[in-house]
Length: 322
Ligand code: EAX
Image (cartoon, rainbow, N blue to C red):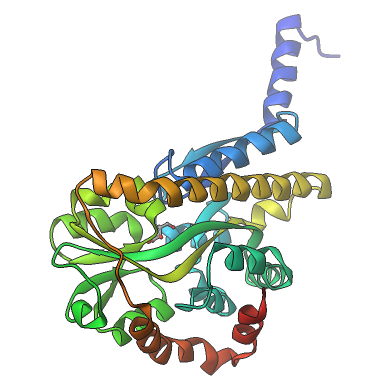
């Protein structure tokens, strides 16, 4: 029979405890203080608390582990645990999600949140689940606006010839082509430098992102076009999630809901305070915009990217939600 010293036994016990504890990496493309950063921290804190410390976590912010498309791929192969991402590149993996990226579809934040928190949101989370990903909860990025370094944009004519970075999203690219810009798809981590070096003239993002990325350092004009609502979603790797007990899965889902709530609260705060921040930092903010001509062109050029594959039923259902 083997004899263990007290020290060896203590070491053994400690190793076992350490093995039972798992640290979850939460990846996202923005700064740790952004609306995603706040949401990532809420996820980690809630998961740690619910699990009594069995799970802890850390953020991988600022695209440290890649752009949003790379991180989604990472979830599928198990190199990422949890990712907070816009739906920007998600349609490449789950085509039904493109319904949410259609320009001028959601009327306001209330409309978008009601849709995502209801039956349609659940159906689409389930669709994500059919594509080698786990959709834990809908979170939020915000209504997107156009910024650029060249001129105030008030009409589609002002977009003419503007090299505009879009997300890697077929619907958005088609929409901007229709509105007259020259869309250039690019991952977010490359964007700041691309704007700085003049590879592109402009980009489009919500106030949340424009402020947290400090785009005023490289952009002079922001037009409050609100041309599309940008959902975010908290995703998990099926390789991680499917290995959890039901109780543990419940903790992850609760943590994702807490994350989304914290992010939405931060979106609300920035929707109030953000425009003042843009002005303070020297941007010209263009608010007198007639959205109708933008909407007509964007709808004509981009809705078929979705409807050719899936028909128009989902669009009607989304519009009908009060
Ligand atoms: O999800 O790529 C983008 O423009 C996104 O809005 C940003 O990464 C936050």
